[in-house]
Image 1 (cartoon, rainbow, N blue to C red):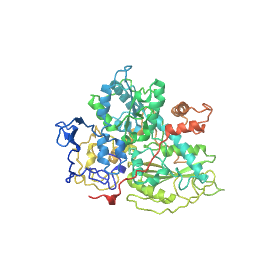
Image 2: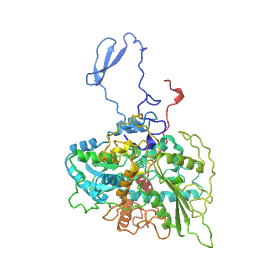
Image 3: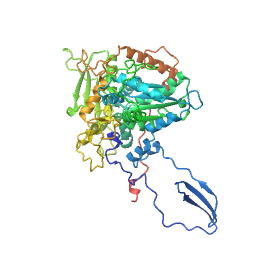
Image 4: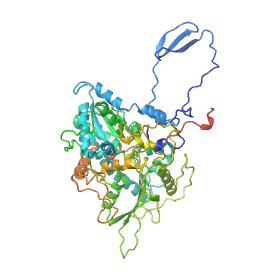
Length: 602
Ligand code: SF4
């Protein structure tokens, strides 16, 4: 099973070894001798594998027989464990499978019958691009969404949405969080010991989040608290849309389609469990490949156009809200746009690929240079950082710049070197300081279009190097190679971990290109600054998305000044702000091993 690199590298492996925190009970040979006349119990196993507790009464006499419940281990138990990780999680997340979805749909009582749940399908734009790229000719992704939506409705789904409106809300909330952190830093409250600090590291990637929580707890204050688009979509579907339909959260069954398996882990986090209604914001996560498999098993052919395909309906929320920048969500580009539009001076953007890598690019915003003022100092420094190798370098740099100590993992201990500094008004970056203010972090090289659950050509496993440049002996590593075939594997993810570069380009083209009107256009040069992306704020989609986002905020948070605020960033009363945080933000916690390694005897 293909997780992001963050979950399978370092000293982890794909086998359930007897580890420090997960051991098979040892057989006991020196059994205690029962006292004469004392009661005793025995455990018996029947032919079907059922366990029974048999009370013996006084030793030797037969007694009653009670069937024992089978112990359940949840995904959360696994996430909290420091022992085996990959195999056990792999086994457990198979519970979030296309069979589960089909099973739910076949047993869901009819509409208006007691117990009926409303099935909703939400698909990421990266998944739509991958499905489009796997077909020849590739349909535009908006037409593809409509095609899938029609097939899904035949299966019983009430609505099929893409997740770009949820991503739009994530961008709006991220800009608020960033300005809060920058202000705290200016005031001197955002330094060492602060719960939330700069640089802010985007946290929409669960591969990166799990890596930080399990091996780099010192990174948690830097991680953005804004929920990922998947989880904001969960809030929208279960709470906001549910209230429009007159349904409570547990009366909705929400399935998402995402580019990686890590999203299944994310949906299973305790923060996204609604205790009041005993339900999750996202009930089941399918990978792109699993959705293709599900549709194929039901006899649907995604290569066949659906009737009236050019018509892509916007139901309750707008579809394909454009966010130019990166194929991983454009978190950095949306923040750059927000800073540029709120700045009183004209800013220009400079970019620099670190060691020439497209997976590690630095961005610097500076006031436009004037002859009188001379060279200007940056007001914002940022980066996009994809792939585990770059991510290790990023952790080192953030730790060094912020003066924190990295404690665990292969990085070793690094002393803090940079003292906390005060900023000049209006800037987030200190003069002479080359520390970042924001980083768009993604665990997969190439970003989300290259997630482990995407469609992939089956012949890429013939390559002896992986996408991060490591030479791999697939046979010795126990990887079963598929038979070479030029066609993409319909179930994706079943072949190699990363796709090849040509395949990635094809998926990116499908992501950006839409002959019906570019639903998510690539970055294009802006007049003032060659590297500044044109952000389509004036588009009809953006206006609609901004207006609807304000309505969602009002209806979920109930501010006293409802309707009077200038925009998403306007502060509400304290009670409404608390609700905003519950609706759109989350928490992280370092996973501490409860086992002292030296105390374990093997
Ligand atoms: Fe999933 Fe994207 Fe992170 Fe890869 S980069 S693990 S696809 S969220």
